[in-house]
Image (cartoon, rainbow, N blue to C red; front, side, top):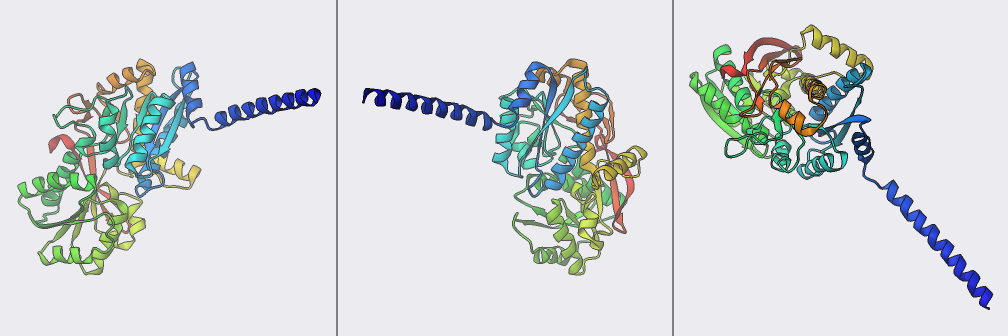
Length: 400
């Protein structure tokens, strides 16, 4: 009996050890994604850069393009030997256009992945959400969210780690307002905007200020909710007010419906739109897009832009749009900065604040240390003809 008991105890001990071994393996399998990047970064094998983008949500057309441009730049850099002999590793998280998802991903990049810098989102709501949280960390965020609140605190001082790499909403709105009146001769303008979207709201007052200063009248201003799909009643209100143009600073999905429904009710006047009317919008919207004027970071007719567009199309089958080149430029800027000051996030932050005269594909980039926004960066007004963009005029944001 004693022998039986002894054998039973041995068997139980073996099973217990096996169970412990299984538990350890399970923990390794559930280690958070990105921890291997942190280990390599710590050992100096590679430079880890974060990319915080919406790649499956409602603004995924924007996030995918920024990610694509950043990846294209990384491939070029690594093919040329990397930065100081180290390869760049891009770690991308999908925000799913959700603020809490973005906050969680941002925190993970800073704490688990140990990234040296983050290529931030173009989405204002997300940029605004992570801005105050970014103060807790030492990682610079090079982003494209144009609402001032994504870069500047209520006291007028910039968030220490947040940097905007395209003209702000104030600058873009002023350019579009000036263009509408000075170049197009528009006098009576109606506005339709998403009152729950920070991007849409941020472009209102700068446009109105510039347009009315030049002599135009805002004849109607119609807000809508995020879930609205039927805009005909709102558009009829604008048309009935005598508008000869409609200003629609809206995201792509909503803008398609607004433009199509405006044409469906017989409105033949001008529509002035923000960055979301850039390609691929004309093809997505259809022939109703013809005649729309919009602002862009680039013009597709430039040779350097055309070369990359062609190469990207051949490799991926996709079109490289304006956000692609924002991601490309910022990744190149980060690599250049690491080349100069190393991969320490604080050193990169300090150097980013001093960027002056960097010639990128989106223009000549200088960061104002007082605002952490670009100074004098040009933007280009276009018109859609035959569902294709045609450049009209360049504007410097410093003029507005």
